[in-house]
Amino acid sequence: MTIYDVSEKAGVSIATVSRVLNGSSNVSAETRKKVLAVIEACDYTPNAFARGLGLNSMNTIGILCADSSDLYLANAVYHIEQELRANNYNCILCCTGYKLEDKQKYLNLLVNKKVDSVVLVGSNFISNNDKENDYIREAAKEIPILLLNADFDYENVYCSLCDDFKSTMQATSYLLDTGIEDILFLYNSKSYSALRKLSGYQSALTQHGLALRMEYMQYFPGNHANLPSIADFLANLDPQIKYKAVIAADDNLAIGAIKYAHKKGLSIPKDLCVIGYNNSILSTCCEPELTSVDNRLETLCHHIVSTLIGILEHREMPQKVIFSGELIKRGTTL
Image (cartoon, rainbow, N blue to C red; front, side):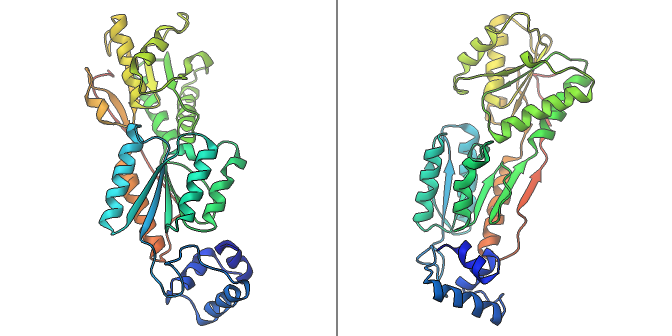
C-alpha cells in the first residue's frame, strides 16, 4: 500500500493525501475524513516514520547524481545543497554512475531511508526507453521527485530545465549568420539534454536551408574529462570532413577542440571557431577564452529548491519551468 494507492481509493490527489498526513488545515473536514477512513481500512503506514498524523517531516532531502567528478553535476550538487541548508534541510548524496540498475538501487535506497523528497541531478536519469523510467514513477508514488535539467511528465514529478534545444539552435544560427556553414557538432552523451542540443543544431541548419550531413555530427565515445583524447579524436576524423567551427555539447569537449586546433597550428577564431556549453570555469581557463552557452545552472538550482520547499509546505507549484540559455561571446568566435 502506497500513498498513490490511498489517493486512488479516496478519489483525491497525492498532494491532498500528503496534506492530511501532515495535518494541514488546507483540507475540508469531509475530505480529511474520507482519506483517514481509507488509511485506517487499509492499515497504511506513511513512508516517512517521522511524517505522520500531525508529525513533522524528516527535514532530509536525497540527492542523486551520476558522477560527482563531472564539473556541471558537481556545481549543481553544490548549489542545491547550499540552498537546502539555508532552508534548514539536511542532504543525503548518492553518486549512481550511469547504469540503470544502480540508479534504481540508489533511488529505492533513499525512498526507504524515509527522506522527504529526492532531487535527480542531470538529464541522464531519464531514458529514451520509457519503460526504463518506471523506477521514477514508482518513487513518485511515495514522495515528490524533482528533476534538474530534464523533462518528465508524471504526477508528483517536478522539472526545472534549460531550453537546450533553443540555446543550441541560437548558437548554431549565430555562426551561420557570420557566414560559416561547415560546422561540426561534437557530443559524448545520448542523454535527454545532449539529444536536445543535437536537435537544436540540426534545426538551425534546416532553417538556413542547409542539408544535414551525418558525418558532421560526431559522437565522442571516451571520457569527456580526457582532453587530449578529445583532441586526438578530432585529429583522426576523416580528412574529407572539413569544418570551420565546432559546437560542443559541453565545455570539456570544446576545450578538447581548442587543444586540437593548437596541435594543428590553427588560429582561433580565424581558422576555427569553437562554442562550448555550460559556461563553466573552463571557459575562462583557456586562450583565447571560450565562447559558451550559459545554461543558467545557479538559477535552475535555486528554482528547483524553491519548488521543493513549496511542495513540502503544501503550496501549489508548477510541475515544469523552462529557462532560456544565453550565448556568452568570448575569443573563440568572430
